[in-house]
Image (cartoon, rainbow, N blue to C red; front, side, top):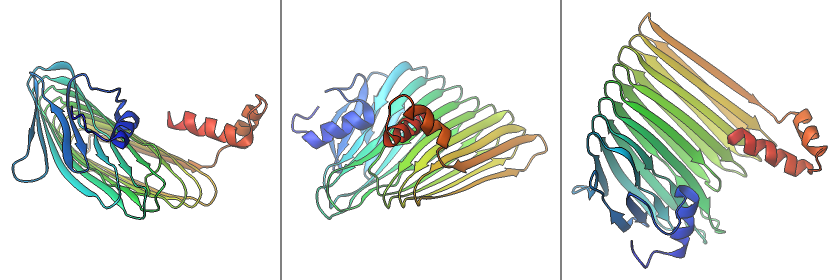
Length: 309
């Protein structure tokens, strides 16, 4: 690992990937558009793309219990980082992938990261994907993170995707598409927090193409101040399948949340469900915490933390 890695990078890594001075397993650290450290393992090979910025991550068939880390950090304004990462997960593998991105600025310049990730998950393979986003720094420049995730699930493959936007991101557009073959399953858990004038847009598009395929998408969000959130999820059932989409949001102050869960049944055996709930923090919840000695602000924060847990 590079000894010259910036202190800001180390702090961002702690926040988005639980970095404690080193990673146990294969990893690639991206710092301001450059590689700040890389290690492959016997079963997980990380290589630079030859035609554009980014990585090819190959996970050998049958790999079990290993982790690969691919965090990206932008440490100053004036950086517009774009990266393409492709994951090739071999048949029968069972692994954890930890991504995450932090953007930091101390001036009026925008700090931006766009990560375009493609997952090719082989037959009977299982992947858990953890992705955290955060913005830090006292500068007036926007902190922008625009992730794109494209997923191909082969027969009986499984992907669990946990994505969290912690705080400090001024603008984000999050786009995820997935195609599921026979018996493949996709589980997505999104947690999102906005405040001030921040804007966040989420778009999910899942095509359930194989018999017995399924998707379970749940988004939980909190919008405060004058922030804005837009959530659109689309599940298309092209075969006998099961699909569930849920959006739960808490509003405070003058924030706005638009939620549009969409279902398209293209097969009579497709079973698709959607739910959406938007509301404010209940007064009785605040009162309960107030009786325990918390201030109103502390009570609200306790409720929000529990909702996004």
